[in-house]
Image (cartoon, rainbow, N blue to C red; front, side, top):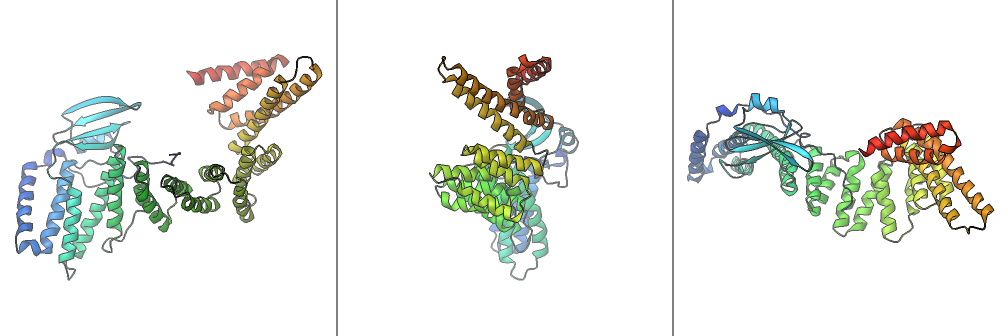
Length: 437
């Protein structure tokens, strides 16, 4: 799969719930309550009373809160120690270059990254799937409550339950259990769409799709992405690229193309959408110039948008139309003198042209000195045109290694022309070496 746009943090969707300390959890008492609830729902009379099922749903949420010790994703280790309690045992381990701190409690282990709680793993459940049990119980209560007497209470409980599902979905995502994460987010969305609740967290709809896609469940990814779009949530345009990729994995490329086309017209600055369009036409053997139609349509709406001219330049650059690419990049820079991408690409355009002349010069027979010198002069001319743009790019983003490396090579090439260029080379070489360390 090509790059999926991700900006998910396990702490991003966290829910602040009324906390209790782990010392206040009486697991024996809870187990007795659950046993009693099991008996009541099996009772001929009590099992047909909606209040019985509301109470059971509340009990299941209580069990979940007890199992998590009322911890929440995103809380710091200090907050954990105050709210939840001091862990029985603490350890650290390296996973994918990250240090994970594990807090072990009686029935659950908590995992922190960079001092924030990311997820937890239950080691001794009071009940299996308490959130699903709670949801099913509330739905049973709704079914039995023909007169709607318990509607207010159901609304309050379902709203609380919705955020529990988000919290658990967040934890599952952090554990890289993406399909499970999608399921939890999906149920949260389902609860939000109930008339009793009628509050849908559109960002969670998107994450339900994102989790499904990362987990390889592209059918559900498409379903949730479409739903998110119905709710007008676009993730700054990224959803259009992601849904396209999901369709590609499902071998339904043409359906996905429609979303790329729509996405580009709405978000012409989104480079993933642009490159997605270009690569699509190339992969299908079609003329990528067709993308120009979308760029020009967008220009009809706003011809002064620098990103559109940059996109046009990028396409011409990819098609090796040097003159048109140069013209488009310059227009983008004219409209936005600090447009890093356009400045860097124009500098790279000249640099790459210089490289091509070098390759041409190396093919000139040794006896044709005048021709060799003429081609080398063209190469040096292009390299020198690249320098001011790369210097400007460095001024805008000194942390960009590609810019530093290019400037280092350019200064090295012309270092014999004078002390200033030699000094620039030495300075940039030192910076480049530090990048390597």
